[in-house]
Amino acid sequence: MIRYLCLLILLPATVLAQSATAPRIEGLLIGALIGDAAGGPDEFQTPERSGWTAGDGPLTDEGIAALRARFRLKPYTRRPEPEPYAHWLPDAPPGTVTDDSRFKILFFRSLAETGRPDRLAFARTLLAWRADTTGRYGDLPRQWLDEFAYAARWELGERDPALARPPDRQWGGIPTMAGQMPFLPLAAFHPGDPEAAYRAVWAIDFMDTGYGLDLNAALVAGLAEALAPDATWASIEAAMRETDPFGYGDAPWVQRRLDRWLDFAHDAVRRADGRPARLFAILDAELQAEQWWEAWVPMTVVFACAELARYDALATLQLIMEFGHDTDSYMEVAGALFGALHGAEVFPEAIRVTVEARLLADYGVTVEDWLRRISRQ
Image (cartoon, rainbow, N blue to C red; front, side):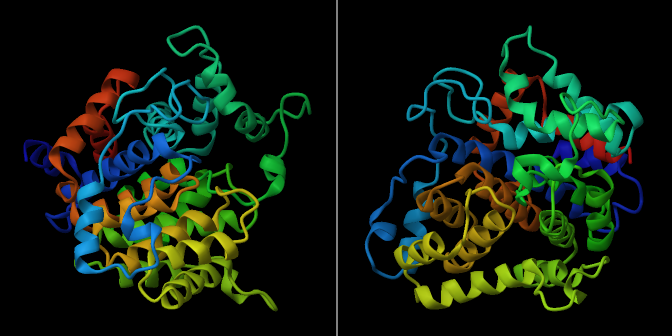
């Protein structure tokens, strides 16, 4: 409560349009961290499924309660060695975050240069962290940011192809969910204003290519709507669909990918007929993912699982965990959405405390630091 009161004192009047905004902004931030930390140990591992997802039965109210009770933070025993895109400590304890959260740390670091979100400041901050290879984590920062460093240097005006390459060639040009990792917090700078949040992503994001930029910006627009008074999952989806300042939906002969995959999420749930195993089979067969971190995948998985779990926060997160694949990325999106809608207290206090303690111990960062940065805008 003290944290909320401090934020209310510091935030400008535009952010204080409703007193409920401050704890929900915190919910967005801590929810993303919790989803990442909970999904990290099982990322790309064989899912550990319960009877509610391994069999072909429907998910009942009892099943939702059971999934909710199963949700927890786990140590990285299934993948004990540090990895560039995952945890950076051997045998990392519960609550340890991965690259999804490190990108948020990077984003908030970049605000120190100009005092506001800035494309070039973000590029410089990215390169500075990549160059930090003499500290606690050795060469892991370089390995993590190598692919993005080419685009960052291009943004800063370098043209030596050994060092700088156009952003559109990142990951071979496939649309990825890269921008979801650092830029979900931009919604907190524009609560209740989806179009401003969408445009803010476009102003800073050189990490996304093709229609991935539209998908990821629309997701942030949805988060901005989630911070609005009386927001619901329906209003979030409506904001995502209706926020299209550059007319993706107006292009001839092609459907906007955002609409296509949101439609698919609902249709997949309908065909699953309440059965998680059937939903998982549909997603596995029809998501058309060359990689499980392509731009439309987290959004589709999150919206489908949330609907099947009847929008229960912890049950949805556990359902995503039991689906598998890029679990930390899917769950950080789900955690941010539920936190923005309901506030930080939708997550158990013990889980919040554990994740924040690990964030401070591993990176010297706190959510309160981030809230102060947001308050200065």
